[in-house]
Image (tube, rainbow, N blue to C red; front, side, top):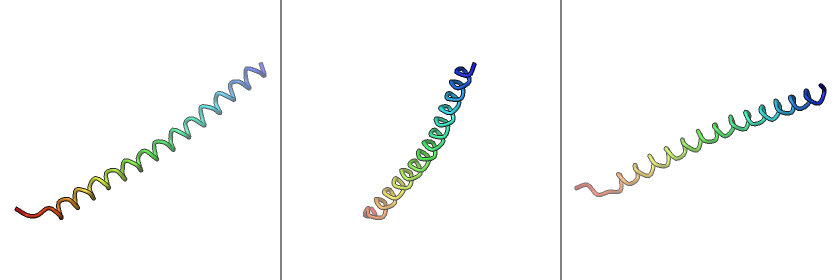
Length: 54
């Protein structure tokens, strides 16, 4: 029964590590999305200010 318990603990540890990594990746993705949005807005703001008025 000890081997089965060790395997179960190993599985739980692996799942916890994967959950933590997933949380970190989701946070990184959120930050990157915000950066892309900011860049997009900044580029369009610059384009609009540099275009001559008709």
